[in-house]
Length: 384
Image (tube, rainbow, N blue to C red; front, side, top):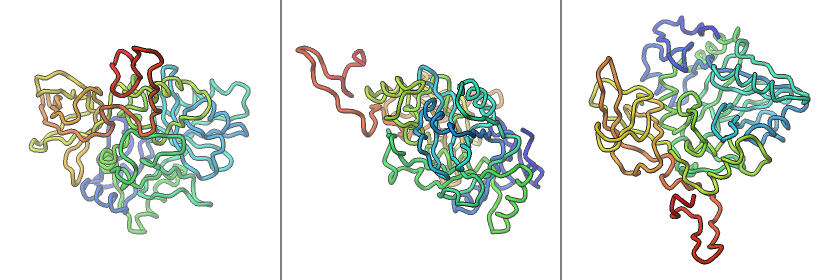
């Protein structure tokens, strides 16, 4: 995908990494973030990938090969799905919405082509047509908590942190979750209309914001992202991503055994945390920095996945750490900036509890015979 034409705006600073191709900010990132938090900003998300699946078998087919129940997905109803490895690790994640004629998948830009290729290999004799339309359609982010209306462009509404039907949660209920205060949706427009669509929103009083703002609010909302929080070992339970992207009671699909086993037995090997970073230094660590227990010389227990500067919270980060790390432990982030080792104290905010038990984990059975211990949250690890 080519760089966004909005990068030519005065003051635009280009984003890097997974957000390359759009603006990090347009000269005043704090004001942009505040406008977005108030519900008065639009964000260029044209670096995201768009895959369209058409054909009469599209929903039943996607239902059979992904983690989500989309068999009866109605028009203009948003959901989310995973493509998992046979071992249950996350390979692809996509927002999903159907327009009545085709199903649209919105994913990270560098995942669109591999996702489309994988779907093409899996279609066999099914009546489906798969297109990677990332070069033809662009996404605009809006702080709106609503599906697209009839006659509007295709729109995917991020319902995080609401627990979808068939899903479950490890973290707090929706009314206690910080993500409940983050409305967000993606509107798909032809790339040729991108600047016009932004101008229409600016004419209505909205401000153009960059990914500095979106990432800070995403971190505050504990919202995982494929490009950052996921690695080759990730299972959805570690990130509390069973809320929106997994249906626990649907038919078989690749990776389902791992999903069911970890849900039933509990204790995913790692857990997502929010880190409040010491803001007394002028620099912050970068994604990939080690998280250590017991000070800078302590043992490594995880890694930072996203770092952001929040307009109210200050420097914050998402990190994935070992499940065994005590929930009240003080942590230290150790990274490198300008060739110098950087040590930053960090206080954790629990996203996925250390006991690794979901809100609706099945009840443990009693002993099957004398001397056998039931499998439960307090059972020895060797039994699990």
